[in-house]
Length: 277
Image 1 (cartoon, rainbow, N blue to C red):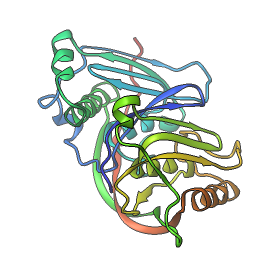
Image 2: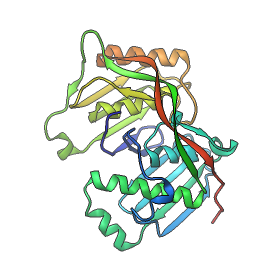
Image 3: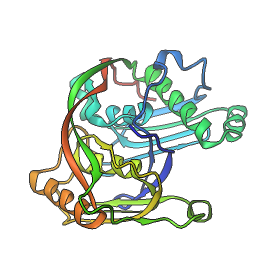
Image 4: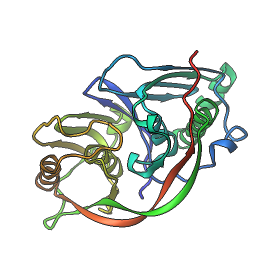
């Protein structure tokens, strides 16, 4: 799958910041990360009692903020995979939601701030993997199985995408807004668009367009309460799925094609509920 840089995305629903990550996710196991990246010096984990539908994951230099997330959602960010690539685990995984606040010490923050995004991103993911291993007793292994995916390809008449102007990212930053019935963004790589569509459809979307530029994207379809918004192990209803397919074709000149492909998955061997602070 295509590699993409981590970017801050402002979700319209619940004003949530989300760190978008690549699906090329081969990383050291959580048990091996402590020697590679700094560890969080302080960690607070509490059950979320808000009852809200929105979730937050904010990853910054030396700091992690998680709100209203299940363990699979956190695994998704830590291991750069989609939810449908996470298998196994106890029954409570998809029902228990947590708030996490973690920080490293001052010297580690200064070291992380010296890194560019390409260097800092894997270190922060390794730190999150170690946190999950330490506090959720998470043990995992990798496997390969055949899974249903959607491949994002060019439509017959070619793309209808507006290429971002040079310098947009440096001048204004990359901002993506996601809500029920729309995805809009500035300076969006197609691989990031594929990840956002994965969330809406509940299945992994693989970028097969061959497009390497960044684009200003506006994608709209009839809003529906049936479209999942970051929820785990769910998929859009058939009517919602068709609406998204049609919007992608008509507005972007792209097409979503279903395929069965061998894919690396993450199997949860063990997990425990964390002790409350």
